[in-house]
Image (cartoon, rainbow, N blue to C red; front, side, top):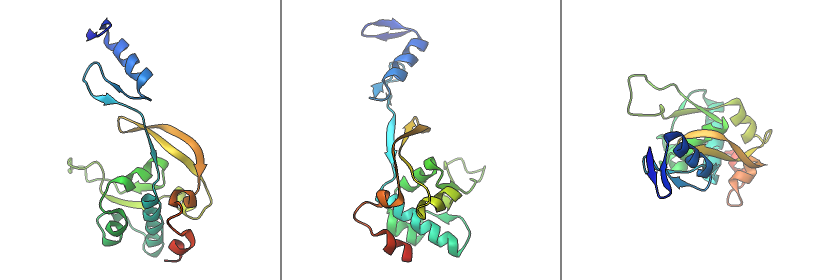
Length: 161
């Protein structure tokens, strides 16, 4: 049983309370962890990085490291580009099973969907809904690669590189 201001609740009731309030965010009555469903979107940096990944992959079919100079020049070392996997636009090279210090290999290649998105053949949901590091689904209207790039970047110019 868990003590709340309103009294004592069972674990199943606490789970229900969290589930019912996770869209707005709630502190879990069991562990005091903040629980929230986050809406993730593709930033212009992520879109630029995906375009460059596709272009590189067209030249040489391999998995590319996030620490390569071209990647760092776009992404500045953040982990945001890995979020492209939520939309199935990239896939990770399988991680060495003996390396328990990393979630992924840090090497990526574009998927069929990634190519289609970059070349404007498909649109994707604006938001990926993420809870406890797991994808719950998608929300929002569909966007194109040009929408993801925003007004700061010229799609045609980026595709010519």
